[in-house]
Image 1: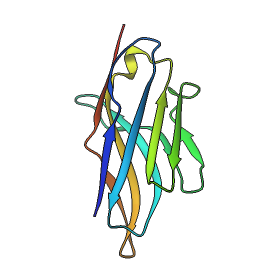
Image 2: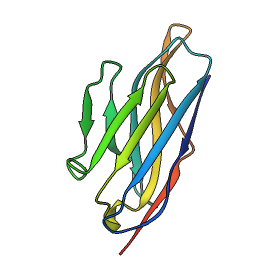
Image 3: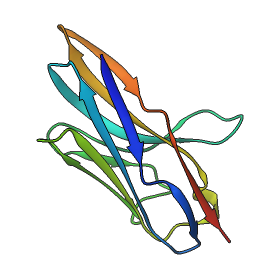
Image 4: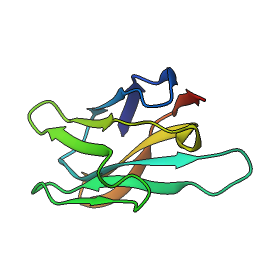
Length: 119
């Protein structure tokens, strides 16, 4: 079982910055891809950014050049540095991780953290 705990959300003005953190804990053999997704009420959860176990990154077009995803592999942490925030970035942000547990690869979600950008 894998637990993902996010932190770092909050209220910020347009143009401001936030740094989200997600810590993975529990019983697992390894963590593969980790990422961040966002979801607005009534809408599907959408990709923000992902980072593989080898450091390859992928970003949604809407955040390229503004957001940076990174990992601390030793501590099973993933970060999302969010700069130049816009009101349309307001959403709940979820951490996701693919983990190998007893020879099975499963996906896990955190509980979500609210990001609100005021205009």
